[in-house]
Every structure is written in C-alpha cells, then in structure tokens.
Image 1 (cartoon, rainbow, N blue to C red):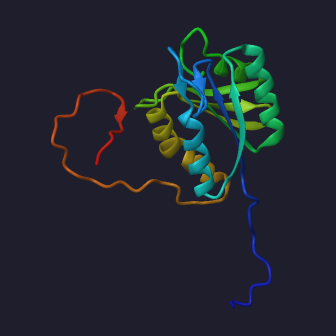
Image 2: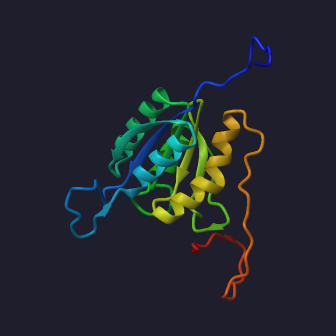
Amino acid sequence: SLGVARVAVYRRLRVAILSTGDELVEPGEEAGPGRIYNSNRFTLQGQLTAWGFEAVDLGMVPDEPGAVRAAMLHAAQEADVIITTGGVSVGEEDHVKNVVADLGRLELWRIAIRPGKPFAYGRVGDKPFIGLPGNPVSVLVTLLVVARPYLFACQGVTDTALHAVQHIAAFAREAGTREDYLRVR
C-alpha cells in the first residue's frame, strides 16, 4: 500500500537450546533423590518462540566434558546462537564454560545481578554462545535481562531495552554491589 517494492529483512534467528546436568529428568519421568525436572527447557522454548525465534531443542547433555563438547559442536552446526542452561558455575561437574573456552573463546563469565550471577558469554567457533545458570529463576532473569536484548539486536531491533515498572516495596533492600531482580505480584 506504500508502493515499496523491496524491503530489507532478517532471516529468523535459529537458537539452539541445550540443558546440561545429570540431575535433570523430563516431566513424566520419576524424579528420585537428587533429581529435578527440566523446567528450563520449556521456559526457553516458550519464550524464544513467542519472541519470533526458531528454537532448536537439542535435548539434555550429561555432566561429562566429552558429551558437552560433542553437543556444543553439533549446536554450532545447527543454529545461529547457542544457549545452554547449567554448567557455567564453579561446581566440579560444571564443564560448559571450559568447553566453550576450548572450542572458541569465553568472553564473559559472571555478572553482578541476583539471581543470575553465573552467566557466561563467548563463542563456539564463530557462533555466539550464551550460558545461563541452571536455577529456573536465574534462567528466566538472565534470559529476559541479558539474552533477550542480545537476540533482538541480532535481528536488527534497535530498541531492545526492557521497560521498567516502578513501585514502592514494602521491605528494606539489602545493600550490595549486585543488581537485584525480585519476584513480585
């Protein structure tokens, strides 16, 4: 209706999702002692799809360096961006950040927010990598606050900021150096 014959567009971003951790089980399976349901998988799929990205679910990866390495190489072939949950903290079985450093480079590790401090960013080969924490609340916060603006910028969106809603809290805020993201209703 405007008489424009050609427009610049971006191909929909393909985002690989990998969940890491021996403790993860899928809904419908029995979660015995020391096991938790993989809720992060569905949070990521739902949000990425709602935002218009193509979510490429590559499943769960055990806490083994070789398995993490193979999964990362596969993800780099399948998608434009790789997002993992878990494996980027300081535990003995947190192998993701070391594998990323080996396969490309780790450019950022840990950010000053709560929840979500164990966040990682880097590259697996030439593909951007975003390592979210494993805790479901931390995943949602870092996905919204850090990953979302990055992903939208990759699609050419210039206004990627979240818009704050300010309200007076009925409690005293703890002093600290990290930015806090609190659940409210």
